[in-house]
Length: 219
Image (tube, rainbow, N blue to C red; front, side):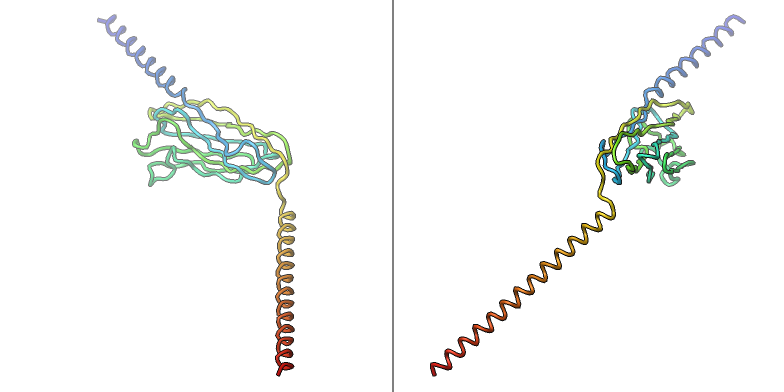
């Protein structure tokens, strides 16, 4: 009897361990990736980095942070995606949603089981501005913690993205100069048009006088 009880406990332990391995194996397939709206950018220009969760399996929460160097690249915005809800009305909440010049972090959890996410989707969008005139900089995922609907937490695989910065974007001063040049050229064209119109009017008036004089002489 005692042996049967011991065997049953061992069997239950094996089943629990196997189930845990299966959950872990399912979770380990998920990854966090960065998809850039452009792979090359000029100084002063901005791009969008879509932070994606790929191949998730019943994901109930996530905590993801993206970082840049702050020298050649600077983070300017953070917008939650639609992979997990971040408001109570949508069935979720966000305990952390913050960004500064060098990092952007978003944590989101569901509060309704019908909002459990699987597959792939945009977790958040990060706006990034280029500061250097030229060079190559890295955008990396420094935190990628996911939680499934059983409460199992795991670190998702993640890979950095390289961005090439080349050329110098038009500066505000250059843009102002360009606008001034355009305005000056427009004024010149208007002035020339007015002069031509006045000249045509004078010539027309002189012609009318000449015709009038000829008619008077004939009489």
